[in-house]
Length: 173
Length: 104
View (cartoon, rainbow over the protein chains, first blue to last red):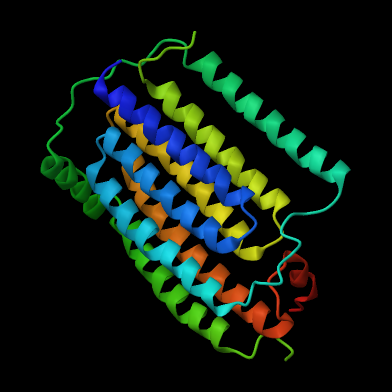
């Protein structure tokens, strides 16, 4: 076990249990904070995978923007009376957990059946600047159309979110 | 065949586990905001898979996909939260059952 392996295990456990806490804690504010921990853990995993630029973007966009947006929206609501945080019904709960377990077992078995030989980790260029440059070259040459479409999507979302949240609420209010 | 040395399968297993946690959050929670958070968890799990494959296959395309997934996820969260705000104004609650009353 080298240092990077120990880092992976710490980050993986943190990320997984923070993710479980997101869905297990009844108070949504604590859920948002656990979501922030999960996002930071995922950014750390990206660092262990040597995707430095993606890790930075993950920290800025998710841990910065998206989680803060969740917390800001939670501040608008009065959630003290939220008693029924979980869905009711023993049978449906067993069905939901059981079907999730079946999906998880099938994914695990697929992973262990297909990835039998361990892929060799080739030595790649670990210079962060060079890696980011390669990413930018691909993004602005091969994928420039998708990049522009994403720009239009974000503009539409900007206008749409304001229009949705500004109305009186409901379409027939 | 459990190996302690970290390889591709470790990242895939972690990603699958996080994805299932997100699915269970969508299934068992009633709060719309927490359901949106669970969807973000699922998208993050997929991002881990993308970056892991990108690293182990030595190919940049996975990281490009992560880029677009992040942009779409941010857009989806913004729209979902705006709808949640609209529903809260109308029904004074954000339980998922209020979404049954949306018409048109």
